[in-house]
Length: 576
Image (cartoon, rainbow, N blue to C red):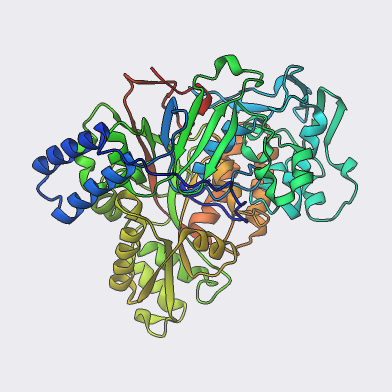
């Protein structure tokens, strides 16, 4: 997964509802906000008056305006507005958190360890060679509208996710299935040649190209979620408008009011409804750390996900509190090159930029958290993998490489832009701060002037997909605990590659590693591939490894456990 906010594809038109403001005077929560920010201002002289006044106005408006409707049991601030709630096309973490609540796969991730556990499939058998899975669906699994969920629903859903017409960036996750990549590429036209077969209403046979250590993890990913065929065929791209909307997960979609909230309502027909801990969950979109903190401090919100929603100027104070939680998880911040454009079609230029990038300077000067400089792309801590080291910070060698490429001292270097998406404030503005720092490094070390280009995030991801950039800020969060979730990103057929880089040696190594059953040989092959990626060809430059961050009061909130994937299924979260 990319940045906590991103998703290509068309946004479905939501059911628009506009909240009506109550005419009552300032609420108790507003008064609590006033008290909080007065105390904060006293403790932090650097909080300027204009920002202080803005926070108070925000507090009043956000706590005194709303609709009269049943109150939610739990309110979560989830980042910016979802681009879509179609699990087969979403790619952003905020969207995926919601789609996982609405649509189940054959497996789902355990909330404690983020390991795959049974979901729509109650059990499965695996052939001795590890290539054939036979899933046994639950006979009590039904759509939220009452119809049984069968293997035909699974087959149709997976083929939809695999269809080029769906335009899902994650379609490649199904390429491990026999015939799936050929079907996607148009080399075969008979769906029966794809290794997905309904043996009967409740037994599904899946044949893989080779044994795959993380296949059950993939079955929990939104791309492999089971979606309602009848509804989609009736409504087309507007299928999320259906009322009622058939869901296969723990929740129903109550409402989706753009720039207001997504309301999730416990599905009484869900096969595991007895373990759904909250009746109503409101998921609020905001990209402003100050607004998020305000809503949390005034008691409006119970949980705030992601470090981008922490005001950076208050980090050193907040991190000391017991309700602010920092942890290690699998995520890498990096920048990527568009290798289809000169001069970045020359690996020497890409390596020069990489070796002119002082990564510790970014983490010590800017992020100021538990982030670690990244000497490789796959984060430390990935299961059964020891990453290789990439290019060092060496301005002298960087200048030499640039001169060899025809730009001594940066002379004659063409106009170049570094693109990042705009953000509201606080931690989310880190993209811009990093951009400014990189700009200065490249000016000092290479004599190259790079222009900064900040664009709205919807346009940003669309432009990145179309390779309409020179250098682009990027991030990737692991989808499962395996090196492949990072390294297969840059194979030639990956929809998330977004660099234009294709390397047949790299493709062969990734393919070979994923067919390898020897757990000692497999990481060795991955390491060879990663060296091509970060040292020889360098279509990307890793900057730092993420440190996870969220805030909630564990004395008031249950069902949240720290894990390396930062996975917290909404089904299990509740207010004590």
